[in-house]
Length: 378
Image 1 (cartoon, one colour):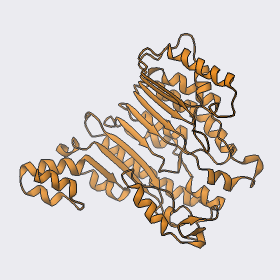
Image 2: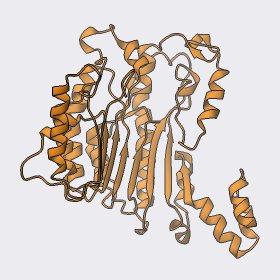
Image 3: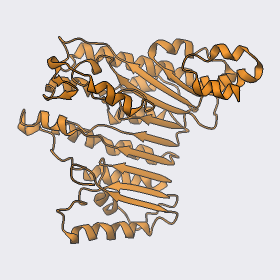
Image 4: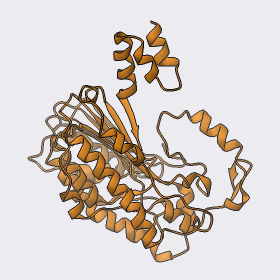
């Protein structure tokens, strides 16, 4: 009971308790190594983890810290040299981690959580955003915000009064993109069974690059992917063009669970409106038909699928072919823009009938949720 109390209450390092006795050593190591947070500077020491302690690791958060910047740069997007410098940090971190993990055995499960941000992101226009772990209490974040006063960056007594410049938004949402040669030079990592790409990373994974990384995780069973929508209409078209191929690559693997959530922010959409009218982001994101239909086909072998805003249930069900069957699917969650107070009953009924017809091809299904969300809509 004493050692369990220590592991629950101790806020500092637990390592020195491991020397008390062998029983304590086992419990302390299980707590210490169960969840690891790695930054690029810690990857060298991570390579030296003893074999017996590898089996204790269940979760790895690769927290990639990018170059810091000051107020002379915060209003502008990254220059090409600056972007390349950050890209090299990301490449090196992934390269070092994958090479280390490629030597690990195949345990029951290992979660890999990857994020990337600059420590300067919170110091300028984006003080309200959260870049860290989900374990940080929301109450603490709100209390910190209440004391924020930075008129230079549009913050007055905890409230943002001005929209950020477009350049500041662009800097926050730069792409993560690596060439084919980079991925070809990396080993497979069979230890990883679950991949998390959370909304805390505002930078957007380019779909082709992400697909190549997934190819190196042959035992992957679960993927949680929470990308941010594009703020430029042209960029959104390009992202939607390559996303179907990403979904198709997932359909060829033994993936059991896929959770997708496309994030948006009305303030960013409003800030960009009217600057370049032909390129403005859609005020209301409309999911691409091809993306939705590609997801439907890719999901035929899944056990669980949740896709919010990145696809539309209307097109998902419309893609169904007479020969299709979701024989393992137990849970399906989809969104649709058709579900709103202004839509005709006939259109909504058509959607529900299509959902019912698809459910007949899902013999293991226990839960189907269709929903929509937005201001005044839930």
